[in-house]
Figure (tube, one colour):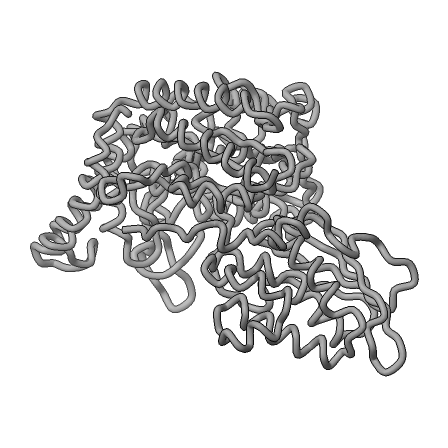
Length: 167
Length: 400
């Protein structure tokens, strides 16, 4: 027996649809301190993330470009607005929280602390889409820990959810 | 529908489900499940080994399964039908066992831009491993093999030409007899990936001049885990084994080993009798329906779905015209990523595939990162096409 799939409204919040239509910080960046390419090998989604760092390990600017579904694009867009101006340590803490959010591991109180990122709480009911929501965050996570240029794959992180690809 | 939905326990238990992903894997009729339960309930033992009656029965069931599958695909010499785990293993067997023994530095391997990764990566890796050159025949804008280019890329250095019978991503039915004839004129060995051919088209492999033909059981109503490689006897006898171990040996000395006869030489270890029995039951089921009727039914649904989708704004269907495709409709909807489309369709119980379909070289050539793919089989109906079209409209509302 297959259970009924959850309502898509839980996933496609208005805020997510809006960021999909008009992604913020969706541009290339000249003179970035760090650049990383994130890939989801199962679906072919790919994005590039640029980060400019300022004094005190603060993220002065970050931007992204790439192709992907509404979830991955909106997640990248909202991530850039959420971590701009934050220190590396603060951004890393948000990464941890977001990761737990999309796996359904955050309490209501913890979710509220996430502000607009809370729009992705519904992803937890769509295990196959966790990787879409996490792609940009995984890229940020590894670029903050690694100097200069690198690449990351969502496969490295073992996110929940069966693959979308097959024969 | 040319079969009863009630024949398929999963579909019967989910009357609202519109399963449109049979190109990935098919649903299974009760006859297949029953045959497997019957084997395990009555005749299960390790075949080819025991001197007791039960083992003899297991051996008999396995041989009988091979004979029925061979008859279904038009192969008289059953020894040249090797059971594998599936198309992927069949093609790796050829690329590794035959390829490593026969492809030399400087030789050329010709594949096409339509291939599934299973008929692409093994050849790419063989070429890299032995210092041969992988050549990729281009495709036309509507997803066909460019026949002129195929002919021009065949040279006396071409050792092997590998192509699919039917494209899994866009459904193109390739003119495999013509492709094979061209390749044989330069002396190339011909390998055909039949994963999307055997489930959907009538086959008479003895009359088809290819050296190797591979397919999977699970895409043609059979269980996952049983597939087939049909090979030319002379090539199978001359090439080394793929895997070594039990069952595939004749005599094991301390210093050397001699190989068992076909088909056992290529079936190392305990054979997968249960799944072979299931696959044979699937062939029997398809045989009763008739592959001509299967093809006609899929063609009608493919045509209908293509027409219905083409009526919607922003929808683009890939591949050649419906009559030249198997039961596959690969499409994109402007402004909606295929994964998002798939999620919205899922809410309405419509299961489609979204992504690159394990055919990234093809997607690059079509210049599209991903498509949505609906694929039909014998249990699908016009109601499934209606649900698909309605779901696309609904997605267009969500993402308006």
